[in-house]
Image 1 (cartoon, rainbow, N blue to C red):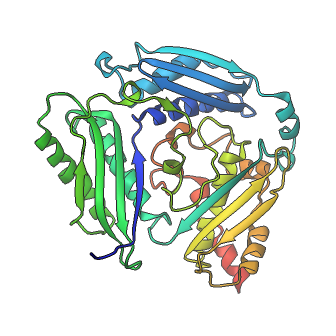
Image 2: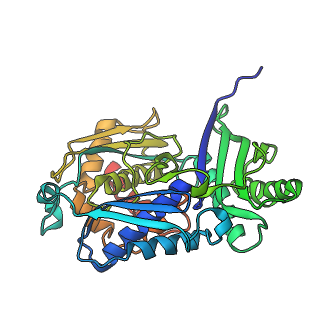
Image 3: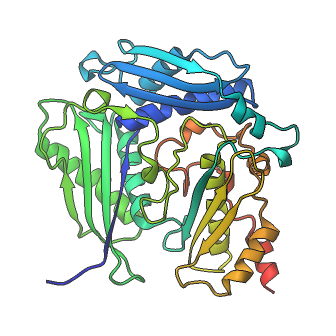
Length: 387
């Protein structure tokens, strides 16, 4: 048997129960920051059959109708019918919210951005690779696009019988790293009962899988697996409990890079789980974009209340064109790693986007959003330092 070097990543749609929770948490964060940019938010959401629990710590001058925000999110996703077992009109919503600990606020709050301390300790990773146009690993970007396209078709009434909960999985063969191939595409898509499943699967293969894979210039002779368990009528929070922060690998690099463990959703940017992860991606992407290396992973470590990282580590996977000591010098010259300056430079408390729009289909490599940490605006400065 021929041995192959295979790597797999997955994604989920906005109707997945964990993503329902993430979206509610991020929509609450958006409303808090909209009214009060100094809001401190750590919001967690739990959802199950026709029930939502919103809890956590929020210190803000914002007046937020948590229940209405949750119902709006549920409606926008598409859970609008009683038969789904979870809907915007019938779900019971309970709110258990209190203020952030003053012990945390004491170390984080400051008048000047440069003095703001990290909202918690933690380790954060950023990753970039030149194997795709957006400098992201191929398996995860293909997986994201599959569920993004399927969701768009559902919401525009082109994908008849599809319901909001979907998962995708993509396996890529890296046996020849210069010519990767897709070997398997798997999609599990919630659907209405009494469908003609042969027609349903034919639509998924011909209107979703093939166009998406071909859009990356890849092969079409992959194995297509669609709803392998048969029926998938009961889904979303009625089929599986959802909790904030359980899709952190989907949110980042599909497992191709490390993850520090901290989730993004529901957290204001003083939490370095979010802001420093964005900065680490920004560094990695600009280094790869500048041609310093073909693949890059950055690790940043922070201590609560401190405004400088306690550690910085770089991994080039043997692809660096220069010594890593020089790379570290470049990072320190080009990038400001203080949490307050990350927030300021990326406009994270007065964002030009809304956080809940990031909740689905990854926080990185997003061609549909103009994200500041995805810009290659440090490439020229890095290249000048190499001369």
